[in-house]
Image (cartoon, rainbow, N blue to C red; front, side, top):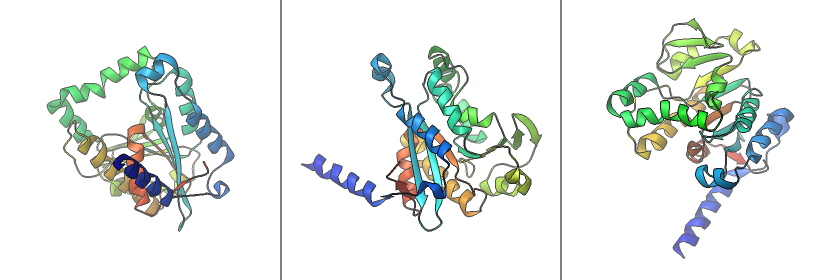
Length: 261
């Protein structure tokens, strides 16, 4: 009985934060098509048993007051070449991408104090990508290959992976100050980090991996939109495990999930 009541509460909460959206007001038909293609990919057989059924978890949310749309591509870190191609097609349809990425200081802390955790996001993931015939990296790295990319805490702006400028990039405020009207008006993509900001002590617990980092990412998503750096519908590219928490946090900021996607 308790489990049934808990399930009903979760369903009721999801319904309370969802509504039908008029996608013509913020999404192109090509964007919707590639997102649906990603959402439709399912693993079968042994791959399903080993890695789970879903390759991509996709969602679209909208703020009914501002009519601002935000699209989400939650990716499984292990995927095959066909899935990788679809992911790249998705990111190529969105001029503005908001990407997950651990800041420099936290990455250095992990390397020094949490070597097992550092390896799990380093060489071990690279090895798994080759074992699954996908040596070209994640959808996150695919997004960062093209356009203007701001790396949190690395004091760099890149353009198509080539260093464009060395400027402070520790906070969202610093990053926003270097997003020029020319960048926004150009045909180049813009990759903004969702994990700039105050240092969070890394740990292997969900309190860091999901909870604290989700809070930081949700705050920065809202900040980029409030500062009008994001005007077109952005694509949020994260690991799929982050998606439920991010959607819940943004629901608290007034966003509703599009129930008709």
